Length: 216
Image (cartoon, rainbow, N blue to C red; front, side):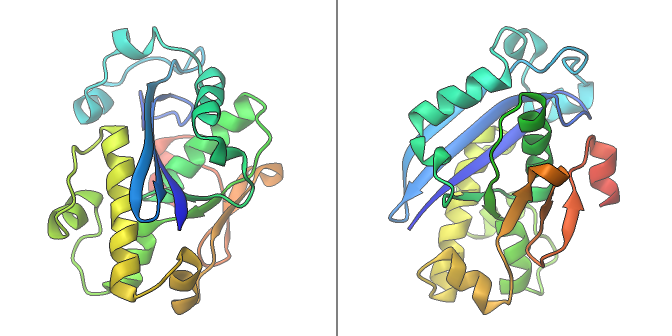
């Protein structure tokens, strides 16, 4: 059982404004490698919005001195070569946000790669259909998962541990087995169409900003 959990934080409403990424590689139900990097957003997408700072506490003076996404991405690929494997399963909590960020950034920097994702938030709605909240904060609290919310590495690790909890509760041996149990599919990006197919097989255009995320 192997998967890579990732999480982005953004500087403002633009989904090109990623200012940090956290990644956690899970193997045999344990975290085996992690990465946390600040990202310098592209020109015209760098400005820090107060609301975003209040969420993640990453200051402009920190991320503006970092390297751009393309450089950070290939450094991450070097550290976690599993990224280059087309069969790698990525995990992302509330995938529509982070997937849109990733699609916007890969298009901006001409990184031609499609991805296969599993969203533990969406799956949680099937495993625990009567919950009042499906937030990462509340799910982590209820299942005793350590979380420093909106630290991207902590969020990525917590999402991965939630996946492990879902495997245990459903007695599944793989992500495919969980999805099959609920007649779901892996999320798959389609860069040619600038979007992705969700767990239900429906195509969704990648959002460009946070307002579009809310509408979806």
